[in-house]
Image (cartoon, rainbow, N blue to C red; front, side, top):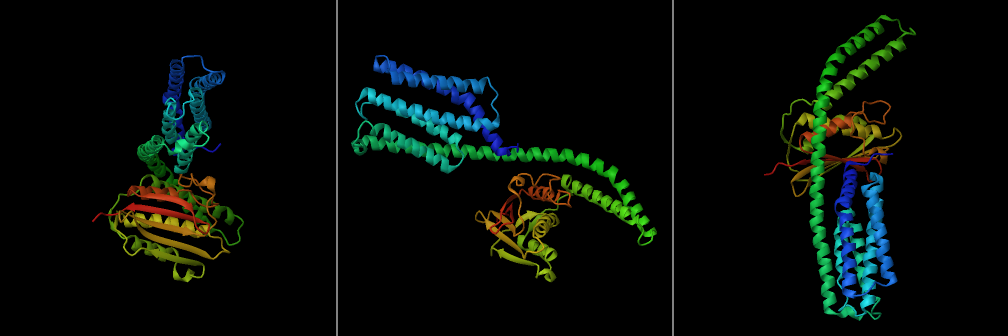
Amino acid sequence: MKPLPLQEREYRQGLYHMERRAGIPIKWFVLLVTVILWFWTIGSAPSPHVFLLFFLYFLFILAQSYFFYFSKVTLTEVKPLVIFSYFVDVVFVTLLIYFDLATNNTGPSGYHDFYLLYFLLVMRGFALFQSLTEIILVNILISMLYLLTLGLQKIEFRFLYDSNFAVSLVLIWLVILMSWFIISTITRQKMELLDIHDRLLRTDNLARVGELAAGVAHEINNPIGIIAATAEYLKKRLEPGDERLDDIEAIYSEAMRCKEIVQEMLTYANPRPIGSGPLDMRAINEEVLHFVFPNYKADLYEVIREYDEDVPIFMGDANLIKQALLNLYINARQAIPPDVQGRIVSRVQSRQRGRSVAIEIEDNGVGIDEPDMDHIFEPFFTRKAEGTGLGLAVTQRIIEMFKGTIKIRRGERGGTCFTLTFPAVQK
């Protein structure tokens, strides 16, 4: 089974702990309080329908408590279980309000305030659902259920014209909006902390890999160099057409491949010291474009430049930034099949009102399969027949050294689009 991305894994773990520490205890408390209030205010035993509602909800909470406290719930099972639990809660609160209205039979001005339990559902919905669309749809559903529970008691819906009802409905949505603002802010800050934690963890791992790589490279480089030099010497000594030439050529090419892997691993784990200075992304991008797509290849590749007029300066090492761009442009060129007219779009943009500078590199190549999107920056991951799988890992390492980010998405015409973003120098 494909492993979950970091944010999805953290999200589901958060749901699991939220249900154990808050969700289930609150449900037991709500059930206890509503039963007490029902007996206290009604003054008589509940009707069979109400008794059945309380009993079924009791069994449901009991089963949920067993699954979350005594049975091991996997991360793949947490989300569907919690969503199912949420909608069971919605049904329970709705039926409770309906039976309360039917028992009192006094209309909106006389029923008990069990509808306030909808506020708990609203708060829980913000923590449960991730997208804004899901949150809006669920809250609209809760509002409609609130209207229906009242409307079923007054077929003509005259209560809709009651000013008290209008005020209560407005207050409900005010609470919804304020809750959404507060929880979205907390969630965004949590995601930022997770991202920082992920970067720190990666930095620590890179430091360990760097120490290991330096020792391994020192021990391996010399034997590899001797093997390659000996193979090259033997090639020169053999006569053309000798059947041993192919074997010696294979030894030489594989030795050079090992040397390249070791060198790229060193670059990935231990980049050379940074010489940071103010840079113009347009000028650096032009140098790399002229190198990767020279004029004599104009028939093979159409290079489209889309530069903003006022692009801010950012801080970085010119040679390292060129290396990162070079890796991306070479990948773009290699992704375009030989029988296809190549199209490379290079965009340099000012973003966030001049607080950052971004460059997009989009090609019309074969693209990257969706399952591979989460792994392309992992060291040694590659789908190419030839390649070390370290090019994009090195690129990401360089970009993050200068507090930048790199993202990937599908291009507008197929292919792949990489977006590099760096913080601009503030004037």
